[in-house]
Length: 506
Image 1: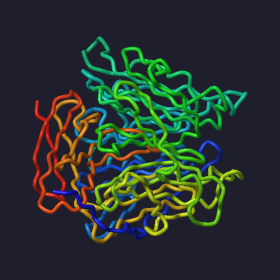
Image 2: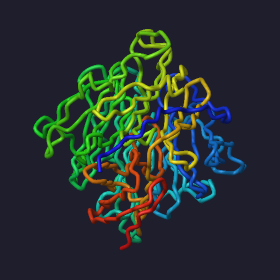
Image 3: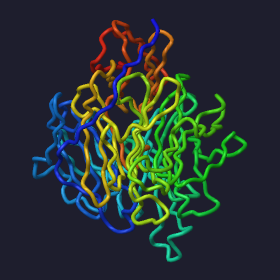
Image 4: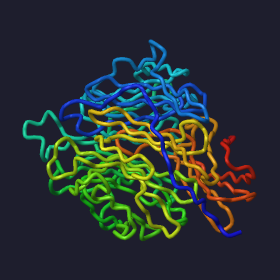
């Protein structure tokens, strides 16, 4: 069978939501992340929105398949009340009890709250989580290393705001927290953090098995606005003693105003491309080697740079923040969503700076569709998400805005293609199989996604993997899951346009 793509034009409608803004002075020019995850087990994800100097907000999903709807948390004691100085958040099941916890990034001391079910949260016992100093934290990622029952967690810090010589060239170190046995009761915990130095004002991190080697390394995106010179993007090898990849490994230095990271296999070779947001040109990196981390920039003609606003009349360079991959039309070709917005009042950058919705084409290029789709907001976007909020098989869009209300758009695209939503479960530690790789095959087409925690800009989603597949008719799908321990499960699935769970038993 020849692959056939759907012919839908993406369309979105505005969803009324309770008012929430990300605000504050210069420590909150960056950040503003969203954590999107199901905290009450109804299969529709909730939204935790960072508030900066103001209060954060938990929005409870009350959607139906026909309409996306949200309400503020109806409980007076969720455990998330009065959280301020929050830059972002990521959902993660730290204690492997099957209930998602919440890692909260702050200007000050970070907070990790234990999920209790029914969208209730409480402090973790101190011995089960790392201890934190007073930092300006703006990035996070997590993975499970082989043989560990607790996740390895990386926290990316921005400027050292206590350095009297700052802010320029005073980037703070980031920190890696690896689990260790405490030697007393045989339980794992966290010892002293390992500094990841040099730090270059980190704004995004992502653990990813970039070369399908069976081990996730740590990609770090940094803001050259404050390190000015001598810095670069980074890739840490997660060996027994972590080290930076360098030229001898095939790594080439890149310097940009790094804001966000996302990864997705766009070419069907099973290896992820890396999208990096920045001021001016956005970058799409592809591997040029199967054995070393050697990347090259996608050419300008591919349509991914999104370097200036496409509507609104402001011709100055754009400022990209959060980035997410997903197929909004389910035509079989992944799209790219980038939130945009001036840092504050930077005169060299556009003030009228709409979000991008870059639509993937059959030839591998991208075309801008934000204005026609109805998502070309001129508010100062920060964190974002591209997820199915109402289980209808269509990916919706969310943006947390600086000094403007949070925005949600429901995907109302007509005549979209086929899709499959896939969740992973395994027994024991890491029950959601962070680090697993999922391959879908239909004849000669291959879609690949990696189950990761991190990336984006100061926030991330913990939802089932969504695959847009085009018009498939009665074709069956072969699903291969490469679990974190590198064992495999192969499933043939005949029913499309549904959600499934693939379970690994010990």
